[in-house]
Amino acid sequence: MIEQVDKHLVAWMRDVLNGVTISLAPPDDTQTGNGVSLYLLEFAQSPALRGGPKRPPLQFSLRYLVTAWGEEAADAHRTLGQLIFAALEHPDYQVDLEAVPLALWTAFGISPRPAFILTTPVRLERVEPELPLVRVPPVIQGSPVVSFFGRVLGPEEIPLANIAVEFPALQLSTRTDSKGYFNFAGIPGGTDTVQLRLKGKGKVLDIAVKPSSSAENPAVINWDVLAQ
Image (cartoon, rainbow, N blue to C red; front, side):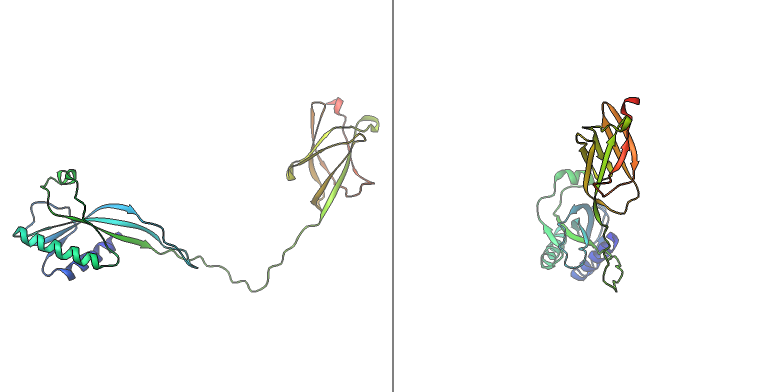
């Protein structure tokens, strides 16, 4: 994709300039004739594009260092002037005329020379996911909601009061009353068994219980808590 931008820029420069060599190599002091160095200097972030009904493309920017050489200094200056004006008129190009840091010329091992930075975006269109065509209206099936009544008894059918009863799957908890009764409201109906956790007198009991929705006939849990 970046190489396509390179080719597009080279073609554009050849349209602007007649008979001038275009090089993607970094600038140096060995070129002869008249030419332009179009050197990819760095990548830069671009603001995200806003999308309509489709996903917006991904985007970043390329920053090129543009320098010129010629048989005479005036030839290089004329070439740069033509490119700057042409780039300023182009809707996809941005021209940065800030001075190039001296450290960059030192890194290239050449003396400072006139130059500018040309910035252009790179976009990647994203493929829209194929969504299945819905030919019939959706059918929503819900589960009935019921109450769960239970009772905790100890040895000799003695009611166990103040026992913590937890329903981990629904993150519910309650305590038994003075007669050992407890209940949970609003649990899914049609369940064969539910997993409960009982806590009392420093003991814990994990047990599967068949739920009952009848307050007169609660699910009975027998727990010899003192025998554990």
